[in-house]
Length: 431
Image 1 (spheres, rainbow, N blue to C red):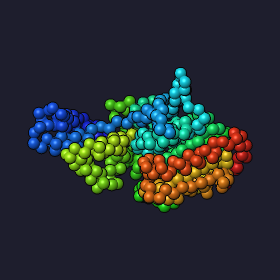
Image 2: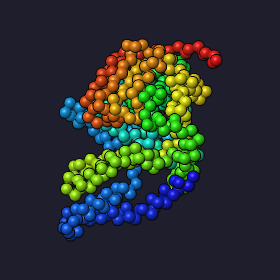
Image 3: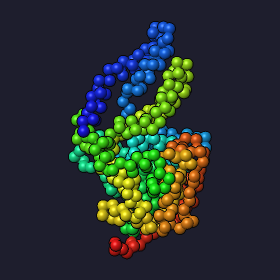
Image 4: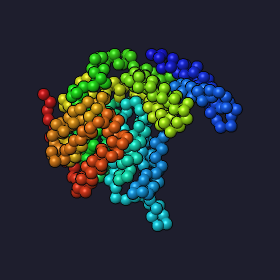
């Protein structure tokens, strides 16, 4: 249980070396510095920066979305906090355009809630998703808080709490005109939230776009799925759950630490990461600053990993990956049974990557056979050829192949008449 504290102690010991490496890299590369004129200065600078980047702390990156280009014109974007909860902030990206003498918000676009995964990386991983959606929509996103920064007295955060959080955000924005885009892990709690709202007779979003998520992990299980099923739940609790050290606001909170998650990420493809760092060193030596900067941007995001609340992580392992409670129709959230067949007024688009090694083919598509209350005409599926997990929501394939279809799907239901809440179904007795 002292592993987290040992990690923090190691970071403290490494800090002077990291600071020295950063200063050394600048001293041997700065224009006008006599050190940069010495033989081999490029290699010293490159090696020092590589050492610095391996040893440094990676804080949460900024979304850094200050404008969006539409039809060749750049429009300013302002990031605003709509709701600020202990474990998640609901952010709004407001887009503006010059209108005569004043600045007014662009009108007429449909609101879209992007539900980012709480599975290691920060919501900024979906920066490209948000920036692309901003061309045509009002965009909100769930910005999850690093659990080590949440004081212990604020209570815990379970998978049930996650579902309730999504419900609150949907109500805050207004379900009647809302479209929800869920990426990876949150496809499960998003479906649960919408099903519970439908069962209570509440209005539900006009459409759900479910991307690369573990809705039914019995379909095409991946290495990630197998790891969760090969170990009992107690193994995860005893081996990956640790207490936050005293130097953070969340001191004493039980979490799945980000540094352990990052170690797992790196261990999945060690050769690829080693070669990437070697290429970075070579680019610095050659003076190829464009490729070097691309490496920096990628690893600034990739290496920034947050702590997950222990309750939520263990719930997810059990409910999603070990007991498959959602597709089996046996999941109770805060005492309410999640019945996906109650979803009737929400269109569903599922998206999978052909080469996804995190959520295998069929896991997301399973939503269609489970949501039997949604008419077939309001269901659609896309398999993105040649795309891995990240390619379906970020990068060239997302922007040129996936997004146009997502945009058209949302537009198809944007003009639909306002929906009346479904009648609350009669409660069925359980066997």
